Image 1 (spheres, rainbow, N blue to C red):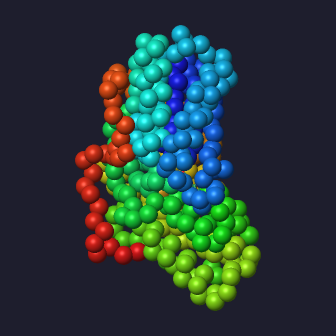
Image 2 (tube, protein in one colour):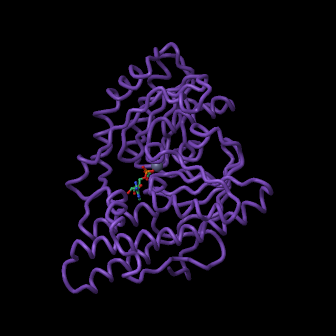
Image 3 (spheres, rainbow, N blue to C red):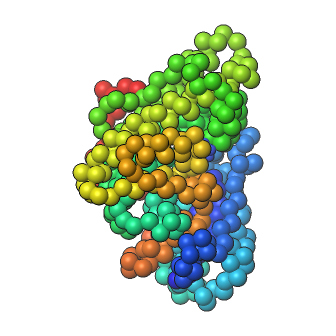
Length: 356
Ligand code: KG4
Ligand code: ZN
């Protein structure tokens, strides 16, 4: 099957063509064109939804044309069109869904509205042919969750964040330190030269039962550490704060993931795959810590290459392909969703009484 995938839910506009007849996982992505909106948002120090929607509108048609050309694909060869249907910034989601529906209608193809999180969740099957079930650590700018991935459309949430997502904490830390946007990769780069133990930062939720996350306290601790300097941070201060933050965040994630491994093993005895996905899974230090955790617990880590961890059309095309295989297509009256939980049965998490 050959599927066109469209991603417009945040600040990357992307179109891709994925082909499962290629056999080898590495050959399945025939094209994956990603246009980042970093330059459009930089003057504002973060993502502005209206700016994002307009940029998606401006660039998407051209990117779809490029993705088809790079894939050497003809419209008549496509088996379906997939677009991110949510969750995300609704203006952008509408742009992608409308384009996907139009192409599907014109060429008489099935339309697949893909949950963005499902795109991240299934990427390891595109890249590594991973079998269900597996434990998923989804760490991105908008989400921080641990899920048991049990099949296409079958996700059991084990933990989520009670306040900020981890990517948000990286981005806010970067902003406080004047490193600009997007923050994650810059914090990682500065942390390489830093001394992680110089500033004493909390490891939120560490040692507690369960698998929920919390990062707002860590963010506040970074703020206090900066204020505590009593002067503008020097280059060394910035390196050390980045290293301290990254280590604290990583240890918190490892602690929560260790608990999730235990719960997951209870649900699926004998299963031993951990997948790290989402933009923050591109972080090398976090990957190293997760490798060690897997080694201690008899798990195998799969982390897609960084370009497939951050938002891209190939993950949407692939999730659409898996949905099409399972006969789960959508109709053209699908309404874009700003919120769309992967596990609708997961209980709401309480803020009250839980402190970082
Ligand atoms: O998955 P993604 O591209 O978009 C969302 O769905 O949110 O994730 C973007 C997030 C941003 O917060 C960005 O700062 C973070 O992923 N990120 C990183 C790294 N690369 C991207 N965080 C830490 N280290 C990185 N190397
Ligand atoms: Zn994402």
